[in-house]
Image (cartoon, rainbow, N blue to C red; front, top):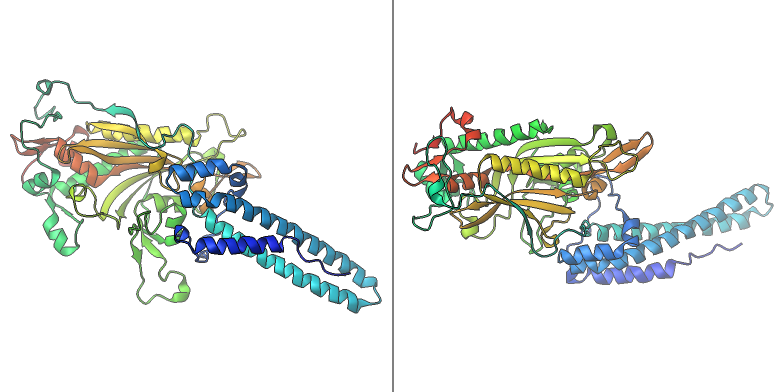
Length: 502
């Protein structure tokens, strides 16, 4: 009996050669060749769904302007088919070995059978190596594939869903008193001050000293500026807690693989550094932390990572958390109008909403929200927070071309900022379906023995610096040279209605 050679070996070799050629091209330089860190298990990608729905994934890649990733979708299907063929070959080899091992017990010519078993073992080892190689290549490609997008998601341009707190059509209708002050959007007859001018004039923002101490895009908040930050945090937390969100104070330093699993990459599509990486001086290289830590750009990352390898019972869902943290962004951008002052900075305080819900399931209890419903709940809470401050805003359904890798659908809220003479983003809310949970191994128990990957959602409750920008620029009174404090924040200012020169 002669050991058979795997019938898929030649096909695997051809695909391997093709893969190596592609990864040497500039289009796929971003594919990671690092081994999976031990702190996080290998992602459980839904490869079967991709193979069966290749057109959907190609469309998502193209809408997101990732044509080089779209080109890999057919290759993933080919590699997957080859790996499956090799698995069948491996099963055939193991079956033959088992048959020969049974024959060996009664055989007189044991040497011949032992030789055949040796050849089969070698053949099986070759197949194992080929399968492992293919699975590694499939994972590298799948790591680059973004989430899908729904049919009703705008493709290239955002769609205005609604406006919040529209100003009166006639500025004369605005009642300008200490109790009721709303700044109308009519600045044509007077000089517009931006938040930097206002903040410096009132003595609540110090950019000059921060620049000396930390560099560009850092800032000090002083006096009522610092009080305003804390007021906004507590205001957002109160709104979230009333809607069933449980508070969490997460770490702002995580292992890089967790940021990666949430869809955050060290560099953006333009090659600009996005994440601050940390090198631990004197760390033991064998500890696993050397060169693997980073500062989080949002509490979304540690909030999502909190549920790593966790299984929620469906009766617990939705699980809703609100986290407060300092956030760190390396990509504050080039100097210019959009980066002046505290609108786009390297370090800031942020209140983040996060939720886990079951994937759509017929066995889910009646009334269990889907991720689509939870996204609307997040948006309604964000609208409530911004409307409560009286800020003129618009709610946008964001296009697929603007979505990050993890997002299936996203809403933004932009507030009018007179100093910038433009709208500025202050919140976003994203439905990530099972993109993050498949990488972090977060599941929901639907029945006693049934587990499904959770759907995750995240949203901004308060991006503090940008809301400060909006309050200063919208509520500055030129005659009084002071900033009107929105009513919900006054209890944090000892009942005062104005921020004045200190």
